[in-house]
Length: 497
Image (cartoon, rainbow, N blue to C red):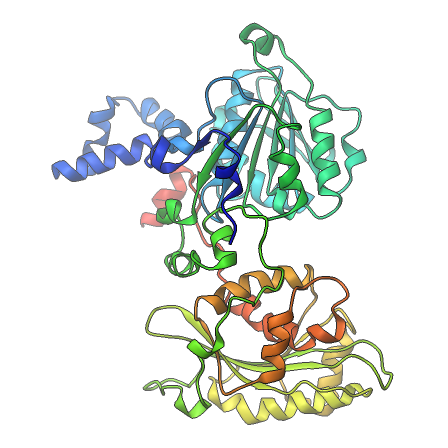
């Protein structure tokens, strides 16, 4: 793995180690704990005597922001908060935007996310989104039709998805919050460059204070061209960086998610996804670092039985149907996998069979999948075994093909909304961390995984690999579960009850 690009370039970087790990409220809680004092003394220690004061503190995010989540001081034009998943990036971006809006009634802001849905679900209404974080007396009004936020003092922010650079033309903004640039899919470099061109509005407050138009970027990293552009001194002369890992925000995250993150932090992809490490010379073969022999099980009968429980929690016959019906068509990927929670509290995957085949008739793969389903379904609880198939190729015809062979078989489908590489990257981390076990030897599958890059045009060389990755991606890859760093007072009270 390459050295961390952010550290290597010499930009100023704030981390929990250098800037501070705890928010003011966390410091107070730790001090009360050290003294053996009850948390009820918070009010006294903070000098709060009135309900109005308590309410103000409850909504004042400066008490909950950690030092590395706070906007940098001094002369800067871009704040780059690069951190692992669940590290508190959205909270930092929301707090910075709300602070700017409250301080400057003339603010003209721009909020950019991967899609319009992402902006609404995460940046605005997510657990740490603007609409949940802002106090009632300074909460913006959301004008859905105009995609516009308007604060009570007159500040405004336009919400635009990062799908078309031309959509940004003609505007002028004094503040920008760009979220998850790692997930921008359509011409991300051009979109990013256009946000620079429209970052040009200056308010009277900014002139008085000598401030320039500024941008906050909150994202997990990836070795993509947009990050090269962002870190190029020729493009950005006044860049300030904050770093954090998933574990730095563990208190606000689901425990099982934290366990998985801790386990995966030292894998190639996990170092980026959870550790926030940015490296540019990653091996394009995603599974190249996996040593299957370390976790291999000789045969399925050697998988330890569990008292009063089925052998697996889930049993999935995964199918990646090939396109075309000619004699030389691609192979149909068919891989059987059992999933179960082990004593370490983590989900492990057991690869039981690779039944991939080449045949022009769709019924051939359906018959093979149905046969495997019946052979293995009793190793999982009732209703926890099924045939899974990607539906991009044939849509509902994929499910109907299986049901024509056997109408009793449970079938699930999913339309792929991301690339093979995006699905495989987190899966490879689980494999590298020893959570995926080959049961016996599957030479063709293992050889294909060793070459797999997920690049376009893979076709026949990716059939087994994609069928292998789907169940792990859907049912094992850790999904972020958290309440966010922000919750309204009444919601906290309900949780306590």
